Length: 544
Image (cartoon, rainbow, N blue to C red; front, side):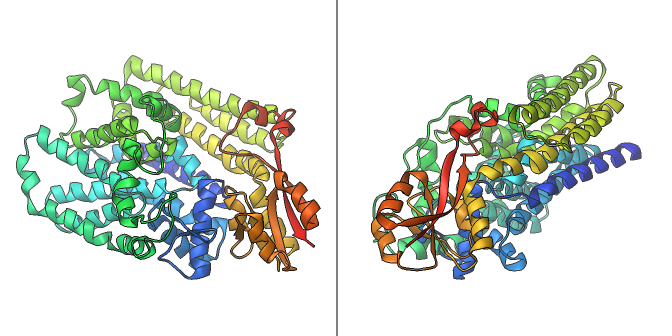
């Protein structure tokens, strides 16, 4: 690899990391990010790291590790948006490092750097840096397990331990389905290359045993919170086993649509999800996959490439067949997508290189036009946005010759521009319509001694996170009556409850807030003239 290319790739990686870091200082979005942050906050305030609670009620949906990591950073940095987002950001960088290591070991340093760059600049990774959930953790732990098991396959025993710990951590983030991309690729690779003896080697059975040992903390906490208390009502019934939910209902139950949480599957869902989630690289990725159907494109690659393809392929297929599908699930196999795309890019030349250079250039132009169009349509009126777009456009135009370096620079520059727009302009403006966040911050500033509470609105977890202390939840008016005499009580309510509170409880409105469900954006909301038509109102009230 030429030193000049190495320097360029490292500079581009540094640029993407720098613009991604801007997201650390933005707000927390509803519903999932705010929910997870409020659970971790509750852990710290209660000093209880065994039980998971949402508004004082037992919660059984996700394993614990996501919340333990957030709670750890809350203990170090204090309860804040920055502390919640920082561990996910760092784990994203760790994931990029593992991608670099594996691709470098199997191929070369150029493929390693290019794979990491593609991963870090993929749109859904950039979005997940702002809207932090559990998927970045899963992605990193899963790929770390793949890397260490690859090293163990080459004969290094200690990698079995680290790989099993990584796999166990992935399980304690999401569940046992994460073992499919970890082991599925290796098992199919051994079968296809007739390495049947690998299946009988003690080290792989030891790996399974170690995973079971390492997930004991999760099993213990589930047993204490649920299996020891069959009287608890979960999903409308008693006798719910947390351990059974962990091993079956949360994963197989969703896949077969037999568990308490159901969905409606669409076999093409992840085909079109990948198209936008892996921008600006998705067209190149699909071309890379199609190229692998030609034998001449496969035989020139090391045979270890097979387990990377199969790890992604089998996981993608299972996701597509599942009855419960969400866009962020695709993140778990974006590392494999990045390596596949990097390999294809590396061998591009001649007419094909010219074609994809212009395709990537058109995508970059579309990004610029989309940003300008959204800004105009939504009337955000960001005066500083114009020079940002102008500088990014000038950079992209400067690399005008159709070669691989310029293709990559243009693609990364367009991704960086999108990230700056999202983190510094778009999301901060949208968050003004996240009424729970606005209400929680306003309450802390104007009524620092208030006892924050929520009346019969189950979805505004941002208020729980941003309000001081642990917000109390009133499930009905009978519960509210028992606390209404508290002079410090301030209640967060929807407009539908305001009339009753004014007439029967003599409520005083302290402040009103506009609300919109930000994860379900529509053209009507983005249109500044029509936006008031789709806004709801929420209020902070005191009862006299």
